[in-house]
Image (cartoon, rainbow over all chains, first blue to last red):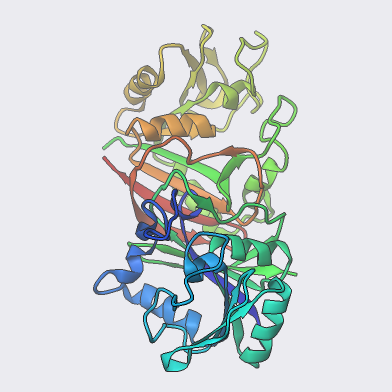
Length: 201
Length: 201
């Protein structure tokens, strides 16, 4: 059955991005440390395994404007094609929340960016339709995950807890109300701890 | 070898106590939910095991004024003997940080509360001396753990991460700088996730 899932890296003090997020440093000061575990060589087997399991059943993604184009409220450069090069690591349709209309952007490898201007539920509807019986993955950033969690739309939240204290930045679990969470899996490596929660509807 | 360790329950959004801490509700609004896993009947075997292991080698405790007597800066009622009845669950010397002189308070079962007015390092020295080759446990609350972590005095931090979002209260990992943490153990039950970190000096 199709579920709505999200996975996102956070610091031990709960930040999904560091302070001073900007176009040149979209994760903010120190924010790249949240993802170090996924870019070491080699990646720990347990970390690689949970990453593989997290993406194998995803039929569509939803992401926020900032994750696609960097911080800002305005329209972006019409030449902008995302951060990921010509063959982004999604390989399925990606629905980007924005206030500005854009034509769909087909990329190599199966990824097409679609731009949705009528809110999180409209984006989710379109993603569900595209995903068929596979999962819809809310890719981030923090405020997008917050919105779906607060609206009761998530079935699962997988946190990659990096063993760092950022001290400032964008917190993940703010303005989300009091969701009922059930721990369902914990996977640990020396580099990161993965906490998977079922969100009870 | 004697180490300085701390274990403390936090919500998934990083609070060690809820909002509005007060004498009648020392853990603040919803704060008792942080500790539910330890008071269910029966406690999950994995949770009971980590609790037992966390206390078996403790030779002395350090705690903050608020943990002993509730929120407030002033002296407390001279009749006050802590929250734990006549046989507190410590069974070793407990050094309480305070700005006010008090006579030591011997209780049943081996616990004696000592009151230290000259700061965290003085309290730690006295606790070390009392602990011998056993560990010193910084019991809380959040601001006391923060102070020892920020000062580079902790060797180990064990977080009991409750699967709840409190949304407000006293955060644990604020004003602690950028400690170097190494995940060394993860234990999970359906009720709580225990994350143990070595703090590199």
